[in-house]
Amino acid sequence: MGEADRLIIFDTTLRDGEQSPGASMTREEKIRIAKGLERLNVDVFEAGFPAASQGDFESVRAVAETIKGSRVCGLARAREADIRTAGEALAQAQAARIHTFIATSPIHMQNKLHMQPDEVVEAAGKAVKLARQLCDDVEFSPEDAGRSEHDFLCRIIEAAIDAGAGTINIPDTVGYNVPEQFGGLIGTLLERIPNADKAVFSVHCHNDLGLAVANSLAAVRAGARQVECTINGLGERAGNASLEEVVMAVRTRQDVFGCDTQINTREIVPVSKLVANITGFHVQPNKAIVGVNAFAHESGIHQDGVLKHRETYEIMRAEDVGWHTNRMVLGKHSGRNAFRSRLEELDIVIDSEEQLNEAFARFKSLADKKHEIFDEDLQALVTEAGAALENERIKLLSLQVCSETGETPEAKVSLIIDGEERRAVAPGSGAVDAAFMAIDSLVQSGTELLLFSINNITTGTDSQGEVTVRLERGGRVANGQGADVDIVIASAKAYINALNKILVGADRQHPQAGDV
Ligand SMILES: CC(=O)SCCNC(=O)CCNC(=O)[C@H](O)C(C)(C)COP(=O)(O)OP(=O)(O)OC[C@H]1O[C@@H](n2cnc3c(N)ncnc32)[C@H](O)[C@@H]1OP(=O)(O)O
Ligand SMILES: CC(C)C(=O)C(=O)O
Ligand SMILES: [Mg+2]
Image 1 (cartoon, rainbow, N blue to C red):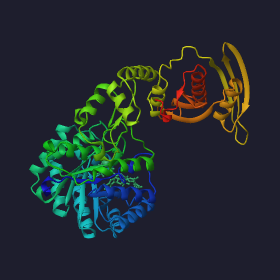
Image 2 (cartoon, rainbow, N blue to C red):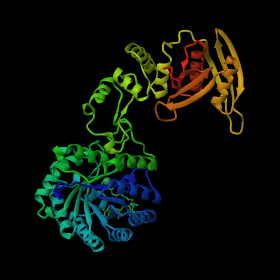
Image 3 (cartoon, helix red, strand yellow):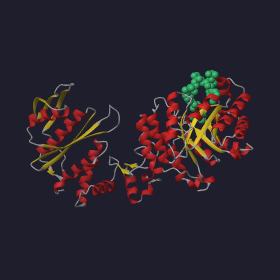
Image 4 (spheres, rainbow, N blue to C red):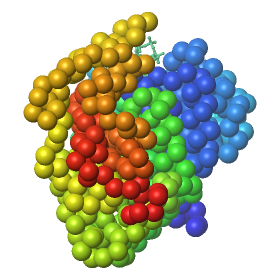
């Protein structure tokens, strides 16, 4: 990859990302993320705004002292004190950059800075010159460039390059631009600024209209050779362009962009998870590249295609961005091929096409009731051939569990057993245990609990819990499932479901016992 074909990745998770309300990071957290960015092999990352507070100064200094593999940058207003503070924080860095900025749009100059355009040009020139005295790598940004007048931008950028800025960053600060327009702006600046060839042109896009990545990529096509971005698209308001999307777009579509990054893409998912864990900003499941569904397939036609030839429905390899593998999720949209393939992976032997069809029919019927089918469910589906319960002997009427700190939990249960209402009260070591004890005191099943597993269908405290219970009696095994927003009730339903199977003789030998 020649210099002209290289796209520099400038990460600003620790600065603009940290400006997301609620995403403040401690020094130790910044160091952990900085190490992740170094493993990702980002060229430059902004560690903070040293003049913002003593804490941010200390964080930038600690990151600068720790990181050896990436250039560490600090942000500063076009003010002497900010620039000197940034220089001091970065003094120990192996490779440092000072990034100084000042707004250039009429709306910002008039209403925020209260400065005339000439004064802004002068402040920019002075700021870049001072920064260059403290650091040999200086970046200048005309803030709100996306709403600035082109003539004025050309004038201030030329002055900043003359003053020694090696990188000129064009921010769409409020995410107002659209791709064609923003790409056009970069093309215009490169063409009209006489000393444009003495600097790398960079872009910094915000996502207010959901266009941050599209705008960044349009700028790359127009000649920008640095993109500023953040992990998971974190950042002020709706966020910045997401690093993972920009990096994988240029990697996957080199035919379109004609350039590539030096990012170690296999670190993308681990670093995304690290940032999500530290900030508490979790990634939506359908987020490109790093969402849990980004490489998951549930519908039968897609699963069939991917099983036959991965590229039918995947344009990247899950492993290349740091996932262990792609994922086939079994659910109500799945088809026979994915079902058979998962059974094979679980070493479940199906003797005939007829047996497969029967198990598949039960799978579809379960999938109508249950969100996602887990491996335990598949084991049960196959081992409980013909297990549709026509006559449930036990039905749950009501369950009340009392659980209090320092007190033994107690459950009151009311069941219909063979048509007759029965009630019982029992203590237990926990709420679920008490519920099971109360049920069993009425049923006297003599079963042993082999497995108890809870999965939440969606995230959040109001999500539906799915419980699987596996019971064994005299070498015979049955699985029961139950779902409810209350996990104790879901557990009781699953327990009763398994008991019914044992009682109606629908149980079969344990799959591990080889009688599948
Ligand atoms: C688009 C962006 O992301 S810009 C970066 C945003 N990041 C931050 O703001 C970092 C956190 N900020 C802070 O901690 C504080 O705002 C500080 C320490 C930077 C400044 O605090 P204060 O001195 O109390 O100023 P305050 O925040 O109230 O106002 C900002 C001042 O900076 C001025 N200013 C804003 N940008 C610039 C600039 N690039 N260059 C010079 N002056 C600027 C404003 O006009 C205003 O000046 P005034 O006080 O004379 O009216
Ligand atoms: C400081 C600058 C680059 C910025 O964050 C913006 O304009 O959005
Ligand atoms: Mg920004």
